[in-house]
Length: 334
Image (cartoon, rainbow, N blue to C red):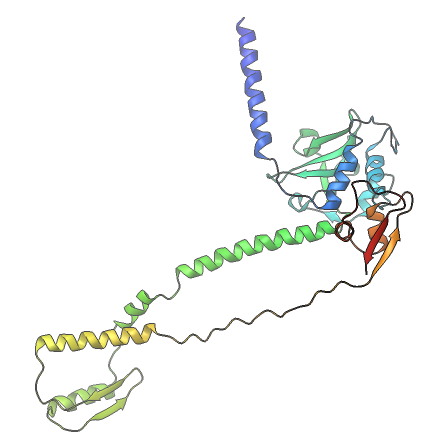
């Protein structure tokens, strides 16, 4: 009886922890049109059985499955996982992987050689990924890179889709922008403010020799009618005739007014900074041509023929349905 209760409690804890972990690492990034098309097409063959050297569509081996999927989009891949690894540019860091990239693993021998390949289906928030592949035991399935068998055998990634390079660059630009914003925020904390200007103005500078001589002369001849002006490195000093000594309160008021004027002058600065206006650019559509869809053609093969992207084809031809039909007319802007 106690053993049954203990087993039930253990099972409940395992289920709860698995569910929480799955929710924590789910990614919310949106896919491009080509990425989504590749994953959707590959998922059509989910649970198809494994067969050595199987090229589809009823059975696959690992490299047969990846070559079958990408052939639909105009790519001719090698018939072996090692050949595909040599055929595409390598991706060394997991965090640089994108949906639609290939991922390569060692075989059972653990000899450092490529023995298995799959397609990245989803990027997880913890830097790991889920991938679609043909496994020897379960056929076409979706697995996680964190599973012990695959995590211990992962080697590197490989990039087929050129648009994934643009996505990776955009992600790095976003990271750099965030870092730049942080540096700007730190600089603003130490920026020059009116309060700091007031503090700097109220600090008396040491008197120059000329200023000292003028003060001595005024003290010795307080009733002189002459007005003298001497320019020093820091300010202009005026000596004026004194007909009546100022009271203490009047003297304090005069000193305060002088300080206030200095503060106002220090805080008033001409704004000479100007931001250039962005140049205006005129975007015009170029001449278009028509293309009649032939049997066996796909949007991707057409995009490669005219050196454009699948997304552009869909934007130029909003009348297209979910299935491309033979005989459809497409507009191509060159």
